[in-house]
Length: 497
Image 1: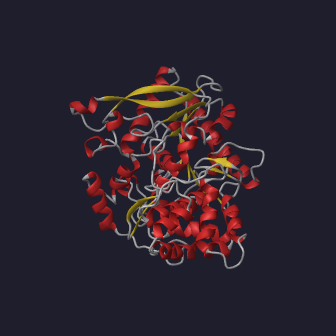
Image 2: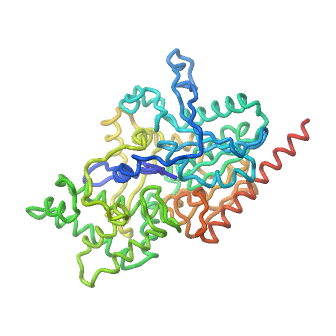
Image 3: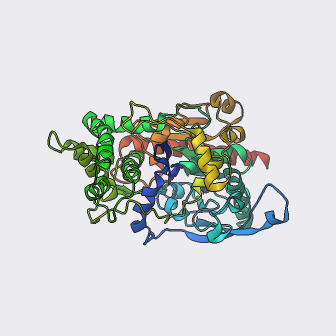
């Protein structure tokens, strides 16, 4: 959801950009996402929301004169089903354009009539149009220093309080929703601002992907398992393709040959961009392995991992592994078949994702490595190299322990059981981020809803007639729990009167 944990990879994001370390240096899987979105972003979908802008303070945590600089934070609002005093459903925006996430979070709109709820989608500071320093916002640490999750959560709190006051509906219960990085923010918002939000639905929220809480190989192991489950032969072909890629690149005319093989619009300058392009296709396809056709990261059919493997398995015995891998990746980049060539080395940022590199280099430190058992080239996490890259780009050192210091994560079952409440952690085990999520119930009110086949915040997508039963049941459970939160809130409110 999202981009996904762009983080740095990815949380594309969305968390949406995944970073990793190799002999080629510091690479970002988000580049391919940005290339894909270039065509689709030219015509934004019509959304049933009114666009508004809220005057937000630059810095909520100091009182220096510059802290009072105001920027205009974008938010979307839909009052169609709302009755005054009814609940307010708020989406805690991710690392990108809020319209993008609103158009891919139909679950909130689907359930709004039942609850007579007001819908609000708030854009995260420094993303989309909510840039405090305009085009200069992502340029240096002087401006980017105001970009972090704590400031974002405070933005949401201030905006929600002001909105309730302006609507003369201060008693309305608020439930926050979010997917991927937005899901992390939703969970953290409930923990940090329980007096503002009565509950949170945190979908595909890898809040345990910090500080070595989960194995560093988790992310890529999950992707590899997705492809192996679809076809062992498919898994093996992709695993062998990296050696063939290396072999071609070492030929006398290796890069021109790769350019021809990958149908690039312009000649390649590096083997690593070709490898990243392939890896991105497999990573993002695993993330958005939805049961039905979707157009989140790119236009794709239902269960695209299986479709990729059918392409690979359909080649004659003895076919070149790299050719097979390219053909499978083309499903992700060119499902419509309209592209004549691929722009592999010219990333664009059509969804305002550029700030994630800063967050990954400061607070959102989510280390990863790749084992020999995965289908990707193995590598060990190199924190020193990561630190050097961040110092070189931004002049700052990462704080790898800050997120767990600020929000917790260690011994989370014991800790949240004692002071947390009203959080749904939903995960689909085909989502590579799921292994960094909460997968077991912590208490009677902190619930883990886990599905075997779900992908990246599948549950937040709009319902379709072709949705599988397990997805319908998951959403039904979520609605039942949210209804319980709201019923209890109104009961307590009456008792106070």
